[in-house]
Image 1 (spheres, rainbow, N blue to C red):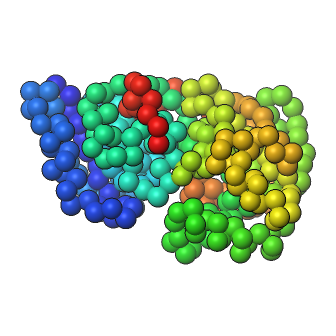
Image 2: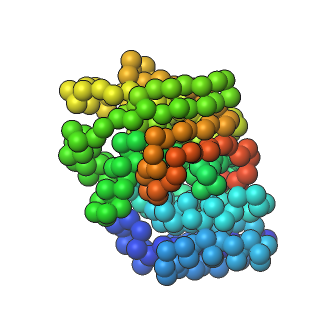
Length: 297
């Protein structure tokens, strides 16, 4: 019998969650196969606490139902364990779910978890802060900080923040050390991808894999605002790396020397960090349940 521990964030996203518990019970209705425990988060960080409880109890599967924050909180508590991680995406970006090609439809996502096919994936750390999709320094980190202040979500609000902040932003010069040597470059932003996208199918590191033991780096050089529409098109069509303003490379370990302490985002969560960023990959540390035959989102 599989023990399924379900964590629901009742306030994530914009869709109502009142019917989710009944839907979970319907999908896992066979009591000879599934023992289901449903919990709701009550405060920030609660999803991690609940996930750790599930690990201690020896549960087979932990399911996170909510937005990117809930999913990341839960996953951080599961790395290095034998517990399978199921995702039911209900956020605005759903970056990890989209990369893993997990259905965005709630019923289909639960059915995928019921099937139980799982694959080992990597995660990354920035100064020991865990990320699963992307981390970054520069302009996108500043926009993440603005999002946190305003509570804004979604691609339209991101575009508005991008345009409003673009003219006042000053690119910085970074020393970047990789497995292959040193890069010193003035940059608009540096994105580090364990997965291929920020969310909403915005492919900032379009060829990243969560199973290759490497992190993909997209270094964006300063560019005029007139190029934004073309670069946005490339971002959403997996062609950003073909732009002449982009430098792309891969490395298992990256060290970035910033000119001064600055805001860094870790899976969209902004935080201030000192001048040295130590970034590395950790191979095959999380079992994500995903379709055996990939879906299209």
